[in-house]
Amino acid sequence: MCFTHFDENGRAVMVDVTDKQDTVRQAEAAGTIFVSREVFRAVREGTVAKGDVLGVAATAGIMAAKRTFELIPMCHILPITNCRVNFDLDEKECAIRCRCTVKVTGKTGVEMEALTGVSTALLTVYDMCKAMDKTMEIGEIYLVQKSGGKSGDVRNDRPGTREETGRKKVRQ
Image (cartoon, rainbow, N blue to C red):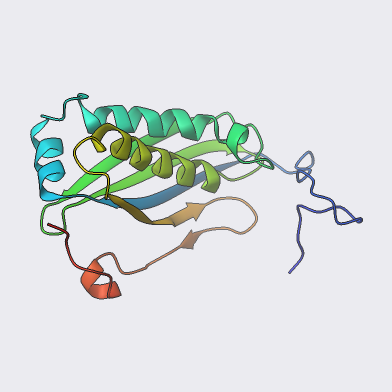
């Protein structure tokens, strides 16, 4: 495997995509924040003191995806054509699962943008709820799928529940 982010002298460089053709590319990432029952109920019922947690977190995720190039040093500036951030509430595990899907027509993929969107959305949930619970846990962030580009389609079919992966049980 060749490392593309280093020059002949071993220095970090941005990959030159000048000669690549524009193609439609899409990526979806997922992640989870595990919260207390109190936080879970407050988010679900919309009673968190700071406001609409999931609405604000979705907006933060979209904003972060659009600005990934400012956070990850070798990422290209991309004209994102679509970005969606969605949440699924899992009452049994007191988990808030997030998915971020990003789309672009361009010379390079949007995997980092989707991962950044999910991460920031979950961090925003933490920020808005930390007065109620400072022991929330963010994790299980991964690329679900990507399409387009030279490497084609990739899908990560990993287990999605703590029981399947052997992770710890719900916190009270």
